[in-house]
Image (cartoon, rainbow, N blue to C red; front, side, top):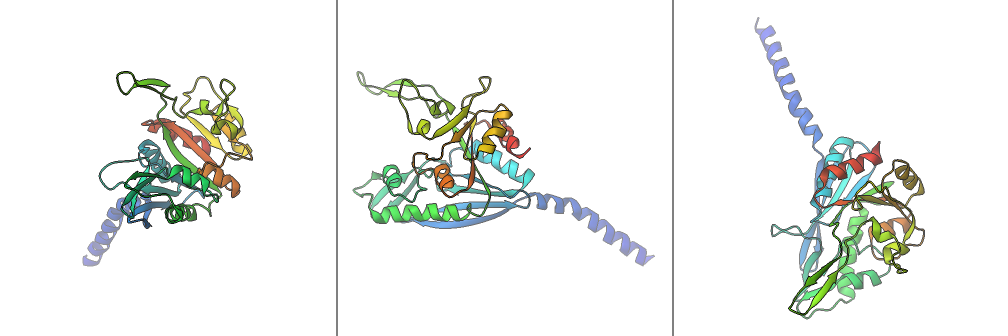
Length: 284
């Protein structure tokens, strides 16, 4: 009798533990890599889960909808997700700031991926103090880019997660007689030549498909012709980056030069549902 009761107890404990095992298996593994940036540090948060052989990358901390969508898709399909954490004051900032030699510098973390230093000289700015953008500052920012790229380079597909404001051009009054024009925010329309004027985005575009029933803030930028064809056939907004894009330090240009298949998923800020739908299009 005691033996039977003991067997029953073991079976009860085993099956009681199964739901907990399932829950734990659903959570991706998290690793944090700390990187020195001048007198400060930033973090790469690296999530991994068994499944698809692809990596999601999230560089703009304030674009929270894209990160939320990426983590949900990672949980469903597996793969790897790398996100940059650099604001430790409770804020979520687009640009990265760091202190160095009594000055504060700032840069866009999606404009630092280039073998040419010119894009870095353009993106890094002194925002406080009397510092200057010299070789040491360039070197410390390029080290962050190198550490980021190490986490991506071994995967055949990189999917970047981005959000945009999707706002029209606006006339803003700063003082009584001082007005400034804030241009239309980034969208798929940025890749169309307007009024005989070509911008960097337009000069980097080979082909474009626009579905007029979709919001112009939801679109893909791809480096592979087969991805372009697949998304266009699904009637989703998509841009094919050309073979000689403007080197603006962006990850898409760098990936293409390295021969890495790259997809940028763009959705309006806050639109998690729409971005999940976009990422599902890539995986179905």
